[in-house]
Amino acid sequence: MNPVTRKRLFIGIAYQANAKATSLLQELQQLAGMPASRLRPVVPENLHITLRFLGLVPEPDVVLIRQVLQQAVGKLPGLELRLRSIGFFRQSIWLGVEPNEQLHDMVRQLNRALNSAGFAAPDKPYVPHLTVARLRSGAGAGFTDLRQKYVDHEWDRFPAGSVQLYESNTLPEGVRYRVIDSVALTGCT
Image 1 (cartoon, rainbow, N blue to C red):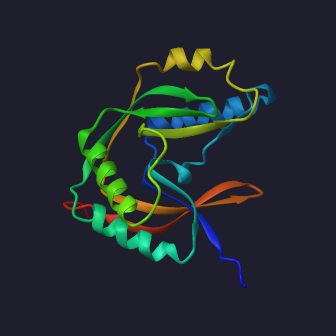
Image 2 (image 1 turned 45 degrees about the horizontal axis):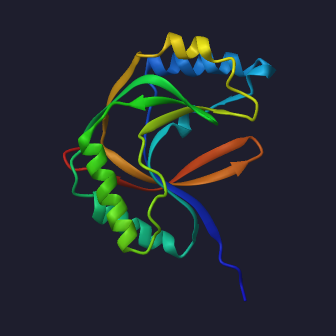
């Protein structure tokens, strides 16, 4: 019996960093140069807002996920997202996404469609954010200045015109994401 190949998948909205966000990434890169920071900045090409983490999925299910993604979001309108402030989870530094009912409606529709197709419901409430750095064990104590500096900073306002299905691969040089499929939202080119 052949083992089924699995892919680590998630659905998200890609983000291209503007000048303000790029300057933060550069600042984080400088902090990462100090061993005590225990920080790994996210590479610019991996920046995204996760809509739904799927985990390890059997490769044959990728076709079904692509169909569900198209049906769930393909007729939804594009939206504008705003990044503001900075936050910290136990293992990451992130930029907040201002409340956006269109985004939450999109996530609800996507979750309903995926749940109907047999994928388990998320076990946590949806908190939209853009991860900019990962923290290794023992990190976090030295980021008070960063938190105070950017507590209510407006980073960007950008149009979200498509939703991507990503595969996450862990490589020796770090995690890399590969777009498997992209679904355009209506009214976007």
